[in-house]
Length: 200
Image (cartoon, rainbow, N blue to C red):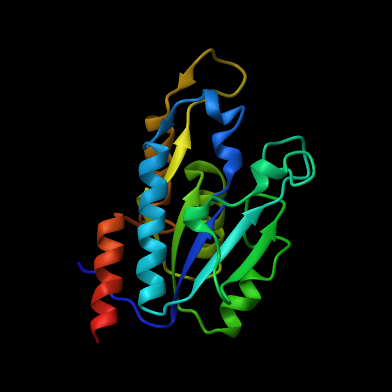
């Protein structure tokens, strides 16, 4: 079924920051290919801008020792150029996984009467998943682009020697979101829906 957009939709772009190209992430396998995902994020943002549908940015300012800590790693905290805010696009800064905690995101969405959300960014099972779950719990229908987010490989929790590859991590995170907290679609489906709106 085609995605139908209106001015009461918004795109939320999460944590597209340089820290995910630095250690320790630089040495980890990622799925899908990070450069491809960033290209898809850029294409999605451009489509929303062209259609004059709101683009909202969420950036992570870690309070811990991290490549996303703005004090310890200004280079890592920096937003990648493909996802940099322009003009009057709203930016929220968070310190935890959810874009709703400790920010004005929920109040802003309600004040602007936003009815449906599209969420893209990094990473699938962390900040994208946490923000999506909370958005769904708060009552918003959410679309997540499966190729507009990516995930890194990870070891299992203590108690086993298993190690999960990046594709498994990505796909399981999306499977947990789909039909429960969100609808998982492709970048192409999202861009097509936005372009159809722009023609109206």
